[in-house]
Length: 252
Length: 202
Image 1 (cartoon, one colour):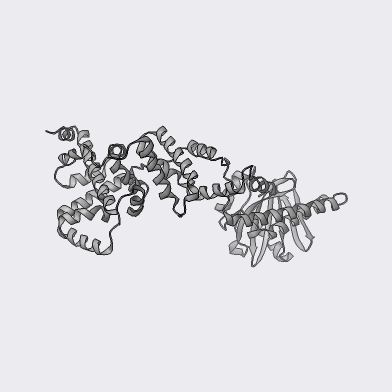
Image 2 (cartoon, rainbow over the protein chains, first blue to last red):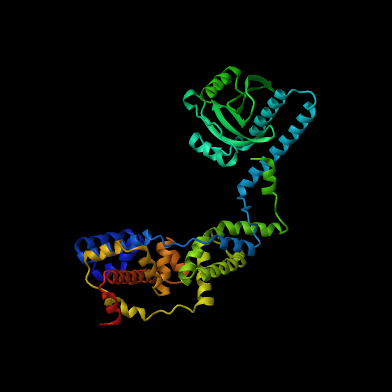
């Protein structure tokens, strides 16, 4: 290859746009030609300088706004990829079913059930509802507490306690927001083999010792300590669930 | 997630037809997400924030109107082609193939040596920006598409409606120009003003 030919494809070479044959031929030439090697170095330096200068302009936010406006697009991002429609429809159906169940349950028990019993029912309702959702309705899927905890922070008015007990056989599976006792609460999902354990947390002014209940075949344990109410619910057998509760209490 | 939130978010088809909704969604997915690319190219064409906004805005409207005819999957190349055509039809004239600028280039050039590499490597962002802005559009455009948008030669050729070989030689010459202007600027900065002398023809 001659210098003239080499100079022709040198830019394509630094852009990775030449084929293997050409680049082999060029590299052979470069090995013996100081002048062309120098040009190559100069090109690379130039490219680096361009990239380091961060010259790409980002579209200003008002442009997106005005384009949306003139296309009569809703401001908020409402477009949902097709595959999500099914998920949203099934979530909606599950939620609607759950709301109906909740209304019936409340209407049925409202007059003559004690407060704790009502809470246990709500806890079980939430647990059952989450089972009907895809991926158990988990909003943040992670076994890393340093991912899960920050996820909650902007979404709640309190900071939930998040721990992982993977080493004890109760790995953290993720978190989601739930609604319980007339407020938004943090829900942590743990796993025990193939079983799920939901832990609901919200602030309270009461303190109370352990309460154990059975609700429709699910085991529920609740207690309040240090200004925080905990409800633990699972299909797991009671003795293993108690083991989990002890772990949880040891860190809270 | 609360059920009520889903109702609000999922259930607002508005008063437009389903078809319009679907078109909007497809447009958003294939075209609108390349807004930064469109704006960046417009900004480098016009060298002015406000004109760039107008150009990009108009390009999106045209893209949307022509969207039924768009069949590919690469919305970016398609969108950038529209930005380009719009720029040359409404803002500027078709690019002239040669400019007076050409005559100056090799005069500022001196021998290849390490200081050149050194100088290019240390060029500051402002000088690089001004250097590219100073390029004639037919050189500025492929350089921006390549270095800032990361497009392949093939994509650039499609946008500029040029053969691949021409894209290659334009890029080479664009870089020659830019290198020369950076060298001139570097020398100007060190107080020798040789670059300017060279341009005015000694």
